[in-house]
Length: 232
Ligand code: OAD
Image 1 (tube, helix red, strand yellow):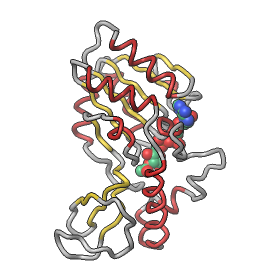
Image 2 (cartoon, rainbow, N blue to C red):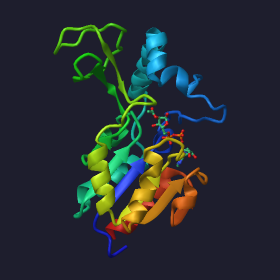
Image 3 (spheres, rainbow, N blue to C red):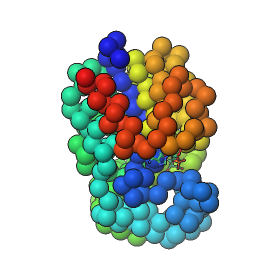
Image 4 (cartoon, protein in one colour):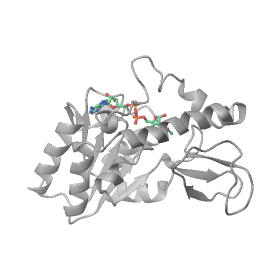
């Protein structure tokens, strides 16, 4: 690993599983008892805002019961100590990376603790429940919604992510099923840029094929081991 300077790390629900947060695609194919399309699409929000808001209220409240695990902490230590470029791109809407201390972080799918005004586009830090028709403090209109990137919407900061991938010497994917684009395609961008590619997951994912190396096991063991190697 001596020749590595620029690192991009993509994380998914698997990194937060050992903290007690459910992954999106459980064995029953449901996310906390719901079909993803019933709680994670603009159509669902238009059809039944009360259900969608309640669902994310429950997820936001759950954050108070969980803490970062050894994988989040190891990535925060890497962020603090890595002298080259480093970007952690998370698909997760929880706040466990930042609570562990990570700074060079992008939440590409939004954040539970943020409300987005569908009228003016302002994002507002939001820690409590978010009833439908809550009023935006910037434009005064009653269109606040969970600041979650729904299916069919554009993830955040794609230009910055793409630029980092094109400069990467190492791309690591942690605990993601590789089922959702554009994140699932990051490995190919990194490969084309000449990066080494490494997957850490409990089991082979839909995208395992693209990675030069896959290590199978719990994130709380694999991530600290990788960070020890990188910082050695
Ligand atoms: P998934 O639920 O699709 O996949 C979780 C992955 O984590 C699976 O591949 C598991 O094998 C792996 N995993 C589970 N426990 C693990 C552990 N302890 N250590 C390591 N790996 C583990 O979650 P994502 O890939 O993150 O989008 O889902 C991608 C997106 O789909 C989400 O961001 C969400 C969802 O719809 C939005 O909310 C916009």
